[in-house]
Image (cartoon, rainbow, N blue to C red; front, side):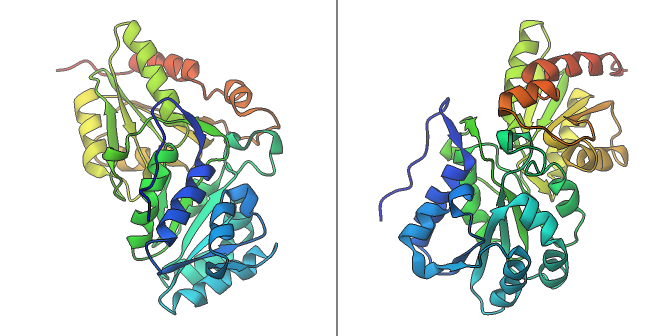
Length: 324
């Protein structure tokens, strides 16, 4: 079995490409999982796996509710179902089946969905899943994982397979910059501090991590040092890293390709307001549906670019308390 090939820093790679590559590599090493597909393997990036391992693929057609319910029963055999589809179908259409048949019973199913956020681009509002983090993190027993780039997604795959219990993982569709080294590894529940800073902390997830890094560089040119945290697990949160950020920098800016209501920023705010309250600002889509367009055009329109993060950070600093 050849070694898994990662991408170089600075390359722009879709996370769904990593999903297919990583899953195919793992299938050559372990026999404890199968792929459940809803006739969208070409869209989710799972096509290389389907071609290489047809005997480990179960095709359900466009019947996502049936697929998720079947995954619950299949998990009782001891084999792990990796369920793949678009988030609008896997999270919303099959919500009842996932909540009741999988999460309630703590069955060992991994729901890996593509087509979410403005990252979907031209497919438009109906495919741009901007509510999935709010929906999935509110279900008990569910772990929620959001890799920042293709390298981290391939690191996350064996971690979610090894984790016992339901997992929801976001898979981006459009090319995203490679910002993580393979040596960084991945652990569920761990946040990754990828840039040091003392004036405030940018907590970002998914495609927004690269933009947060760019914003931090812009701020540094103005004499503002921003810590950047890659929050690759939304549930459970890395309490220690977030507590340290609040105590040591005194201000938190969150950034996500998701509705600003109920998402990652809300999760961080819920934690800190009850423990170490500091000035916060949540950057996300402002409680509205998306539109059709290229991902970068949509990020500009909806206020999710590095430029917008830079402005939001400077506004937040106006409310930061001075050290005693």
